[in-house]
Amino acid sequence: MTELDCRRDIIAHCLKMNANGLNQGVSGNISVRFGDRMLITPTSIPYDRMLPEEIVSMSLGADDGAFEGPRPPSTEWRFHRDIMRARPEVGAIVHAHPMYCTSLAMTRRAIPACHYMIAVFGGDDVRCADYATYGTEQLSLNVLKAMEGRSAVLLANHGAIATGYDLPNAMWRAVELETIAQQYFNALLIGGPILLSEGEMRETFEKGLAANYGGVARPA
Image 1 (cartoon, rainbow, N blue to C red):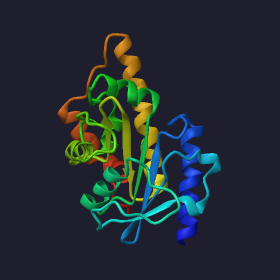
Image 2 (image 1 turned 30 degrees about the vertical axis):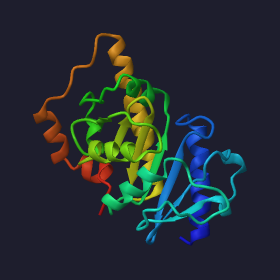
Image 3 (image 1 turned 45 degrees about the vertical axis):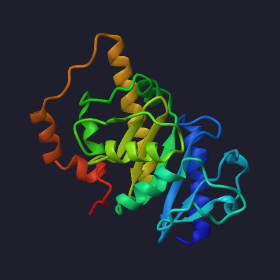
Image 4 (image 1 turned 135 degrees about the horizontal axis):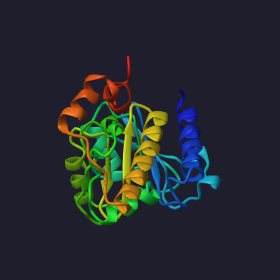
């Protein structure tokens, strides 16, 4: 994929993100690893008006926030960069404010092993990162801590992040996370779910579900 193709693909997935209800307005953001740089959506531009040349390019090695492009990057560029630095297997990141993920994040609760598909996120739960102001270094630190051994995370009073080995994989995981969040939310309304045991989750991992879908390493 050329850089232009990658920029166009980011815009297409931004439009998809809003069309499928994962996000509203311009609040979400997407990034893709491109060599030793990161391509990320600019701040505050409606996706249906965004142009490929407006996608921002940033060095993954720089600490000063310098960027190339006509507009500044998303205010959340820091955790995008820091995730890619810490997790070389991550090729793309989708951040959004989905209705059910965000509702749960407002209560600052994790999503437990209420469904076997939780395994696709790398563990027995999807954690909720501690709250910090958006765009800050502290938020990035909180995200990295909560994502240890995981490919997705909720952000307290904020939204959700999903990662993947490429952009379609990250988007699939974002949709799956919101689906399970909705199911968990509904189960809480009728008394709460019966959670799967450690042994039952172990059997799920042994069947290869996490490796095939949840791991951010490309499936064989």
